[in-house]
Image 1 (cartoon, rainbow, N blue to C red):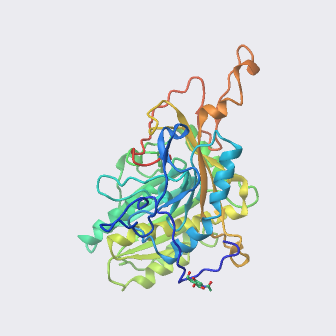
Image 2 (tube, rainbow, N blue to C red; image 1 turned 135 degrees about the vertical axis):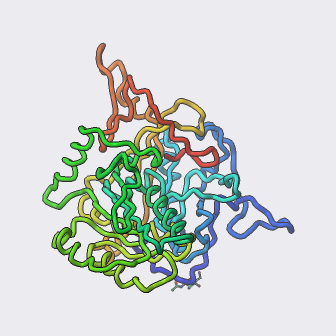
Image 3 (cartoon, helix red, strand yellow; image 1 turned 90 degrees about the horizontal axis):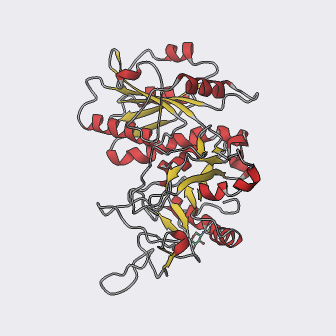
Length: 416
Ligand SMILES: *[C@@H]1O[C@H](CO)[C@@H](O)[C@H](O)[C@H]1NC(C)=O
């Protein structure tokens, strides 16, 4: 990335994991396909893999020859040698991968990606826990959705899809509430009236915070290290724009520090209120997007992650994240895994000050491998080892009985 100038007309062939080894009626390999040798490998749960080459998955809703995708894939080719050499140096390594902020996912060893039952590859690396946790610091998010009279039909459908897409970007370190408003305010989840709830692995099963956890979060948000809070606070405002006299509210409650960023999502085709909605975002360190169709939702929602990833450039303390322990469902074993990941920022001089996020690199690690570093015989008769990650989650403990088996479906590799 550092030495590459963006080339809008770049032609570049890559191995697309959905298209490899696929031929057309005439027996020719399809575009972005090509011959890609695969063989069963015991170390990778007997899956068919290619240990000489990583390959690329692009979600079906992202154009696989978009110039931004092509340039970023071209740049990330250099990772191939790094992945191979890592695996040679440490044969206990499992999957190594790079999730790009443009949406593609480079995985080593290379695999054939099986589409889901609808024939699509819905997997978007930017929605995964490891990506979001590495790309942003913990977030407190309030989603405010306009349910006034004009938000009917398609607009409401788009608004709901936007909410769900935002929820999908939240991990277990984030806190969220959804508020619907017309002329009065209504909490969508009335049990949690007025409080933020933890955006757990399963977003649909929001649970209220325990007092101790809340305290811990508060303390973390308030520990400033002289560089401001590490916690991001944001309001996501979803509306078709009809509002007035809002300037003074921000002036009174959010200025001059502007601690709470406001992201605005203008729904529908009308642009009458674009100025208002843009003003709110731009004057509260947020980002304005216009969403006129369902197809616009995913990419537009992703934009906010770029803005929220920026504080991390200043403070690299939280660069490496270990996700919560999860079951390796591909192996159908009781093997507990963690994903270790860190964000990748552009080093281009002109972008250093804004911190442009290129993506997230990561690897899946069986916790057993880590626990081997503390063998029983070194711990003494009553000693035992446990693992705790930087968010205070216990990853491994002799008494740990995992309750959640976060189940990535079988067609996906075992990535949390
Ligand atoms: C951009 O890519 C095209 C096609 O790959 C190539 O012919 C052209 O020379 C490239 N332009 C620059 C400025 O490198």
